[in-house]
Length: 506
Image (cartoon, rainbow, N blue to C red; front, side, top):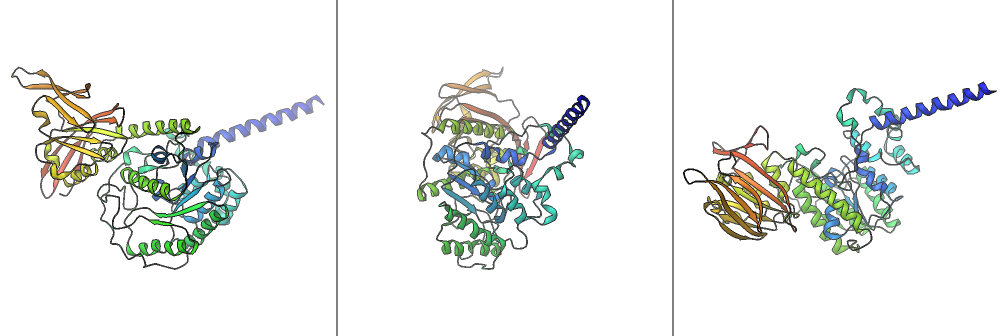
């Protein structure tokens, strides 16, 4: 009898050990993207007033944390790369089991998909949509609706695909899946700081909005389902089309969303218009997606629209404000870390287009004004290029481009300059044997910010401060040469790194 009990206990212990080993290996081998992106959504005990759905256009284009800071809106970005409208439907249906939003914002970029309900090119991203989603009747229904029989198991029981990842093991496997600070957004593909970039685009040639492609697609079928689900649950819905440069054929697909919006009496906010808020020279990550400069503009445009058209509460003076403000501080720290990591001057200037930052930019090599790409980036920071001359050697940026002071001959002598962010002072600190300036200090509102040596191999220096407190957030230098061949070539020296060459047409 005792032997039998021992055998039973031994068997149970072996099973427990095997179960723990299985759980540990699953946690180690799983892709962490879904948990990083969406864990905050499932762990939050409060309610989200706004949910965003769509493809990478939305996940890279709309920032819930900026909406909180500017409008007091509690929102979550449930969009994802390659997340077509049929997946949006099931993501929303699942989300409604955890929160009751007042508004759903759905971007209709994938309205044209007709042959598949999910993107065959975005398998890893589709896992991001489903891996963190708890197993439930809704999730099972979603998997059976979206995937053929041979593909369902990997989404219901993802260890069936992740157990083969042993050969892929690297340092990233040991990283803890810390939730993102962006409430589901992934602005500028920012899980990889090195990918921060600017992609100048030609604005699209716009068709008349009455030109539509009225063919039926899976995208339209599930768009109607989403609208009907929202109306059944008494949730308002806003259809959108975020800015990019679609061709004529795709514009006809996007225009057809108006036909569906009219049929259900819901608003459609088409942002692909002539009088747009984006700058096609500076606000895009690639041909299809906004970068962080464009995202901030799109988020502000959306914030203004939804607060003026929908009855949403401003929660900034409520009992939940302390938690959201803490989340915003962590998000702000993340943005500073992101900026500090940049090695390319153009990426750094693009990230400066953020109303939470002020900046003082000293320019020692003023030939940068010859370069069209960089002139565009300074213009995006609020600089009036008509005021710029060859003597312009200092620029003061207020709130990421709300205004900019153009200063000429800043380095010619000591003195105090009144600027939009305070008194900017230059005081000589050291002279050389030939009575030439060797170093000087720069002060902002009587506080010394740095000492600069004129003998340094520096062509441009940037001081970044927080907009209200004027606390220093970063101080960085760049070196470059500008020479004209067929185009101006600007060669940058990375921060503590090797030279980076860029050729930009004038």
